[in-house]
Image 1: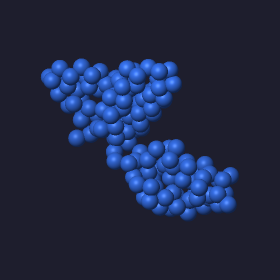
Image 2: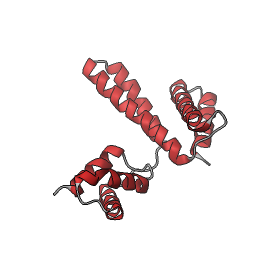
Image 3: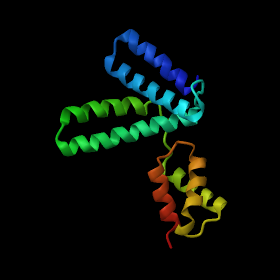
Length: 151
């Protein structure tokens, strides 16, 4: 079952269970996935699981940003709502890799790209992100690449 099929199935289950909060999040997610598919290659397009994970990751990042903003603004009720949405979205992401696995993955990517300094960080990042295949946050990959390329 693909990620989009799982989301469709869970949307139907949420409708049957009359779970409004989950249903709203899943509808928003389906909309974001459809928008990304249209942007990719037209109205009849669909996304593979890696591309769908990328869209979900973007939605997760938006929730993190919203939570941070609402906390600064003292809006506890909105923080709670965003945290609920975040928890639901994270159920659809693949398991994250550990710090040790990330370090090894970055080490291999640096060796593959031939990067020796921070000036060549872009090539190492591209290789590392391809190897991570959506299982690690771009920020975490970037920090690890910088750490390993430091003099």
